[in-house]
Length: 325
Image 1: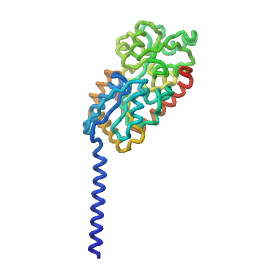
Image 2: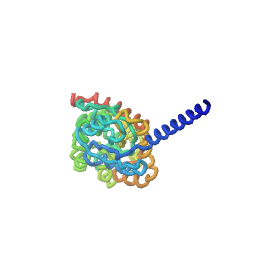
Image 3: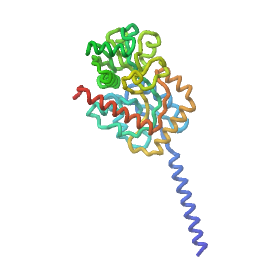
Image 4: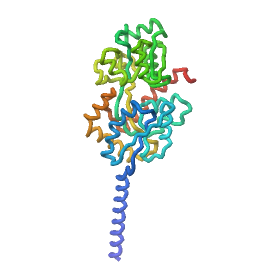
């Protein structure tokens, strides 16, 4: 009897060991196929911000991260498709807060929300600038605020479009500064910068990428960076936070998965991003600098907190506007 009992114990132990090894192997086998990273915009700044790191993640994952472009509805089409995708870690979306936060707040036709996603990692940080022509009478942001208070609603500013991130950021700034500015919407930051160079508008709020070269060449003046930290690309330009205007929106570009994606797969993708940055930081930093961006890696928890902070800020801004209501 003892021999039989010992035999059963041995068999059970072997089965348990085999099961544990199989479970571990199953976890380690992800991914078994390429990961699809949806860019919810046409080719441009967003994919350029994400690609330097996404390309290097293959070294750890053993599978490529393939970019797919699905533009439409300000990013809502592509992000919506990912929100409704199978939560298995094979379909992700990469964006700034535009498609993940602002679009579902501003567009009532959108059927997803920020909480429809499981944050994985933020990769890179861009910046938004408050800009004027180099020969503008407004030498500082305080100069512009003072003039705006003297002649409400007459100073014009360009943005990347109505209800876009640069429009909302400027409205938050205006509210905090207690001034009224006249909004001139464009189809993207670049056209706004072009018209600012031509002095068709008094000021522009724009992403750093299309403006950086003109600032360094002395054709445009950056009055402030919309953030709580200065950018290493323009270290002498103060932030809106340090000037006392409070608005803070570092443009973090990152990736998210559909809500419900297993944590071990979220962690596997994040670790691949972390190793990519650690192994190729100089190369990635150089590539991002050409886009007016810097490396900034946030883990899933920190990235989730950032997205919620942005949601709170932009929800208040949108509630204060009458556009689209």
